Amino acid sequence: FGPWGPRVLRRPWGGGPPGPPRCPRGGGGGGGGAGRGIEEFDFGTVLARGQILRHEFIFTNSAKQPIQLRQATALTPCCSEVGPVSEETIPPGGQCRIPTVLKIATTQVERKRVGFVVQTDSKDCPKLIYALRATIYPEWEIRGSEGSSRTVPVGQAGHQVMQIICRRVAGEGRILPARVEAESPVTVRFLGEPRERKDSEGITSSSRDVEVSLPPMSQPGSHHGDIRFRWSDGRTQGWGIYWEVVPWLRASPSRLVVKPSEIDVPLKISIRASDRPFRVTGIGPSHLVATSQFSREASNLHIIELRLHPDRVSGETEPRITIHTDHPDQSTLSLGVYVLPTGV
Image (cartoon, rainbow, N blue to C red; front, side):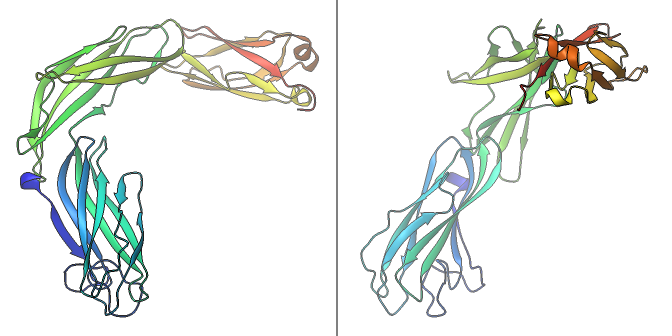
């Protein structure tokens, strides 16, 4: 691991001087560190590339009786492993290796710590406890920026701005990509000039902003596009772009579901605009809507309360309610009314 190489930390939970893991000479239930503690091995600063880091702990039997190791367990099996451990009896003063693994897979900076427990047949030393640590930096990552369009109104173009960050330690790691390209219907380009900084962990980070332009869409729905970064050494990396095309006005609930016994009960609907204040000008059709109440003032959010004609709603195959507005891009909203079968 070069200049940012591994460090061994032996930090007893209950205090005491550092040293190799030994069984406590009494008191039972001790750990794998000195006295009643835990032995930790610190890999230091690591660039995440999906690699596996390995370390072997050395257990020394400091008891007066032979010890046999039994079950070894990784407390975070998703990203670590332990064993296999020797099944042979360890005499007093004898030693045994405990192989451990830390799997490096992350998309963000994190300080990782995983633990292991090894059970024994000793009453004085029933378990040994170990841990691996690492400060992990992704070799490269994408970060979203404020102001990016995650939702885009129908018929309007949008954009997303993100930041690509590449990291190096002691000359190893990635530099920024030379090019970025996109598949239709999105387009992409670099913004501004690259930036570089060094932090206290010895990491050199280079970053650059990327702008993705989203095309206008005529219908609401979920959409995705793909961009690809290309490095000068031939490496490429893809990245998915996701956005939601939404109506200018959105109703909640998006449709009315009522029981036959509740058709005559007042119903509430909220209408929210994605861009500007608007007015509700009317609700129909009149043969389905018995009464309605709403504000006549302009607002980004309107709460509507209405009551339906029970017999007329039940008599139609696909009844719908229409809300009229003065919004310049969406003058009406249509909500279906679904009447549940009797007994539901």
